[in-house]
Image 1 (tube, rainbow, N blue to C red):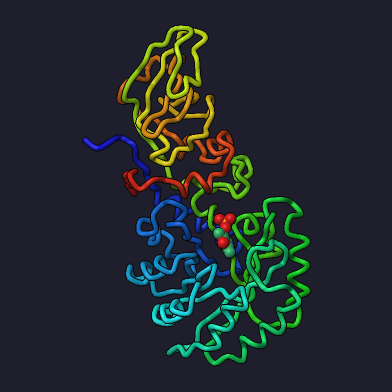
Image 2 (cartoon, helix red, strand yellow):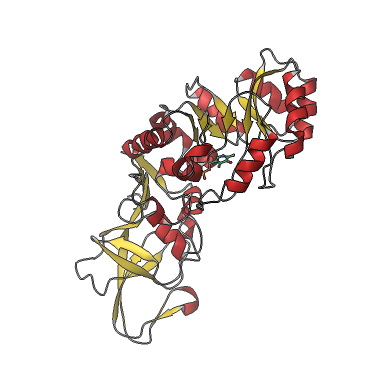
Amino acid sequence: MPRPVRATLDLAALRHNLSRVRQYAPHSGVWAVVKANAYGHGLRHVWHALSGCDGFALIEPEAAVLLREEGWTGPVLLLEGFFDGADLALIDRYRLTTTVHSEYQLSMLEQATPDQPINVYLKINSGMNRLGFPPHHADPVYRRLRDMPAVGEITLMTHFANADNPHGIDAQFQVFRQATADIPGPRSLANSAATLWHPQSHFQWVRPGIILYGASPSGRAADIATTGLQPVMSLTSEIIAVQEMRPGDAIGYGSRYRAERPLRVGIVACGYGDGYPRHAPSGTPVWVAGERTGLLGAVSMDMLAIDLTALPGADIGTPVELWGKHLPVDEVAQAAGTLGYELLCALAPRVAVETV
Ligand SMILES: *Cc1c(COP(=O)(O)O)cnc(C)c1O
């Protein structure tokens, strides 16, 4: 019998979320961001449900190759570009679009002799200070790229650090606009948060990631409650043991939780070895038998404990949802001091994935 923990992926929700993105950004092309193995969902499992997008954007060259081998013939964008000259052969062979964010990439492109011109995303650093050319280099870099025989279409790009705040893009937006005022061509600025909350940033291409998977760009479930986005992944398992605790009894490693009154405790087959956050404290919400209850004590590698005192109907074999349809991943993440992004990406390879 397989261990009961599994991730169920609702592919209809994925398609629905893409259609919500289309409604939010009706005049823009949509790059479906599928980096980090489609935010932990498994690129192989999900790409087809997202194939109504206009292109896939990701970080890992191997994942771009996988998409080609799976039969995707549309655009594929490497969000960090290429890492060394050898990647350029791969970009040429698989017809990938590449970000260009640094001088070393320009020099490599200058040396390149691809079979067909390579489309590039020229990344401007408008204030996040991770990747991109300084704003005052936008013009000269654009002209250099335009004059390279190896380069095809050029799209201007930047990335926002605070698009989940009401005025969070203003300063960067202004910097980008000024830096690119004299440069023609398409633009791509918006991540999920800007796709939802800053329509003035949509331009020709939006780049949503997390909202396709039905989680919140701000980390707060309430912020997407009225968007119609639906969770794609449900992480579920079952109760595999029940313990009756007396006052003073402790639960799990470090005896971190001690019963103050008689408690009925369910042991669930899911732990940090499955991707559940080890730092989730007692009280982190867990959904069981149609109700919410709370985590008790330390999460271990293969198990966690939940309070069943008020749920006499819950017993061995009762299904438990750690996050998903009934319990937003962002609520669990918030209790554990992180974001839904991190929990989704951290789904462990040993968890069986099933699509519905
Ligand atoms: C990850 C990423 C995105 C998508 O971010 P979300 O917050 O998940 O929408 C967009 N653009 C770039 C450059 C990224 O690295």
